[in-house]
Length: 414
Image (cartoon, rainbow, N blue to C red; front, side):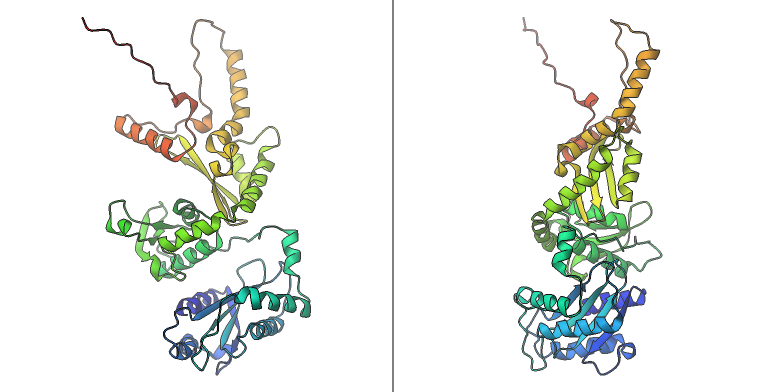
């Protein structure tokens, strides 16, 4: 309960939400202090301490562009809570202002004044759906079914701001970002989750491989500084609202896999629309064009400058994919070959015109600029580690580095 109320109250303090209604409280919404809001719910929670799931956090979302006055939103919230069986409960109604579409957050408890519990099992299907449909008709709202037909996927704008080490309060900022990302994005691994978290200067750290935290399946979240290094005091996953622990995240990995097809196809269409026109854009232009679609592209490079993978973060639909998961044509190797095709062709034609043809003299062939190593190392161990990492993690190695093993002919001993 504390986590739910603090989440909404922080939004109010930041000017991103307002308290519209305090139902069955002793004072008007603007007169209530945080302590009084918590105590009102705690009085009920103490009557049934054995109930673990005792807080209710409901989000009512309206169509994009639908203009609703505060008084109408209050009536809708009251009507909805009455229809789902919470009319006699205390609850707080917050209007959030940090998204393109209007939406309310309602905080309540399922513990009644007599200490009995309101059953939450199947409440969404049996009560909430019927209440939603009835309210849409009564108040002349845009129907949810019509919205689903118009757009198969929710297009949610990114409203999070990156954490700034030294300027943002670590605990609150990290908790807010982690809660929003873990609940709002579609990801299927810790690496994919971290790809999104790092955009907001946060990372999930399971600890080093042989550490006690890693062996026990622990997880902490850290803020990152301007150099991308961990800074500040780590926050345990278990103390963040929603408990995004490694065990709970692994459950979400499986759930997210079941809903990735629509996100995947929509992302592929966005990429194809940019790659289809001839000539194809170069690497930098490709990133810029996708950025206009609110899609971020991350090319992964080793210390040698070799690109071994690519990740797409679709902030518009809030989903993250490795290129290889979208298909072979969207892997790092295929993308770089396609993006650099025009440049490689023109370079080859220029070289053929400037250099005299020599049948017996081997000619120098250069790699496309996007795949050329940016830095080199003379340390043999560093080179081997980079090559091994690229081979294990990615789906791309420059063709020039793929060599066949030659059989060594051994002379017989005399």
